[in-house]
Length: 348
Image 1 (cartoon, one colour):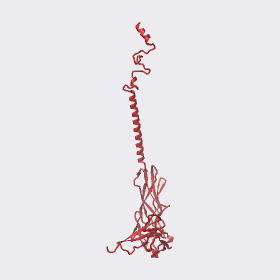
Image 2 (spheres, one colour):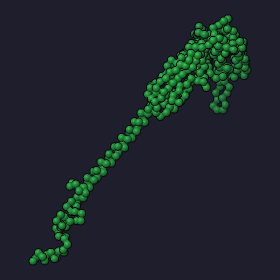
Image 3 (cartoon, one colour):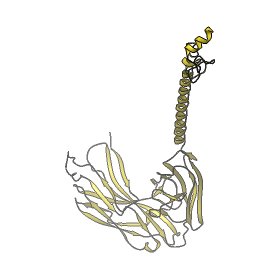
Image 4 (cartoon, helix red, strand yellow):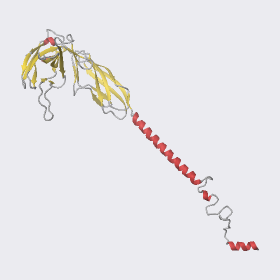
C-alpha cells in the first residue's frame, strides 16, 4: 500500500488536575508493574482564564514517565462541545481563540523521567467582543518513521476557557427534564435534563456546585460538566436509593443573569411487585384456612353418621343408656323395681 494511513489517539480529560496517556510496556506474572515504554502526563488538564488574567502568561507541566524519549509538538485546535459532552474538532468552530495563543516552546524532546514547562500567552485582537472563548491545546507525540501502514499519533488535549473583559451574561436555560417513565416500582431512577448556555460565557457545573435535581428533599447531582458559550447538551443523573413509595416532585433549576430557569416533573414510586407478593401470600393463607375448615367439617360429618348424630352406635339411646320407654338395650325394664318382683306381679 502506497503511503500510510495516519490516525490520531486523542485523550481529553477535561476534569481533574492532570491528563495522561500511557502506552504498553513489558508485563510480568507477579510483582509491581514495570514502567511502560510510553507514559506522558500534562498538568493542568483544564485551564480557565478569567478576564483579569488575559494578560498573564499561563503554563503547563509536561512529564515523561515512560522508558523512552519522546519528541513533542504543541499545537492549537478549535473545538465545540457535542450534545453528549464530547469535544468535536472543527476548523471554523464558533468562539474559537486558536489564533490568540502563542506557545513556547512549540516542539521539544523529552528524555525518560524528564519534565518541561510550556508557556502560553494570550494575545486577543483589538477590541474583541466581551464574553467567553475556547481553544484546545494539543500535546502530540507524532508517530515514528518505522514500517507499517497504520501509524498512531498519541495526543493529549487540554481545553482552555477564557473570558474577555466586559459585560457578561451567565444565563442558562433548562429545556427539559425527563425520566424513562412517570411511574416506577422502585430504583434506580434516571433523570435527564437538557441544558443550553444562552449567555455569553462558559458555565461550570462542577462539585460542589454541580447541577442537581431536587426530589422531595433529596439532592441528586449530575456528573460534572462544562458548558461553553452557545453550547447545549443532555446530562443524566441516577437516583440510586429512592424511597419505598412516594408521589415525588422533581425539579432542576439554574440561576443566571437572566433569572432562574426551572423544569419540574411528577414521579410516582409504587412497589407493585411487593403488592403482588402480599396479595399472593394473602391468597395462599385464605386457601389454607378454607381447606382447614373443610377438613374439620368433613371430620364432624363423619363422626355424626348418616342420622346426623354424633355417634351412630348410640342413635337409639339417650344420654343414660335407656331407650325412649325406659328399657335398656336388651328390652328389660330398668325402672325402680328389680326383675323378680315384677315377675311375681305378672303371675298374680
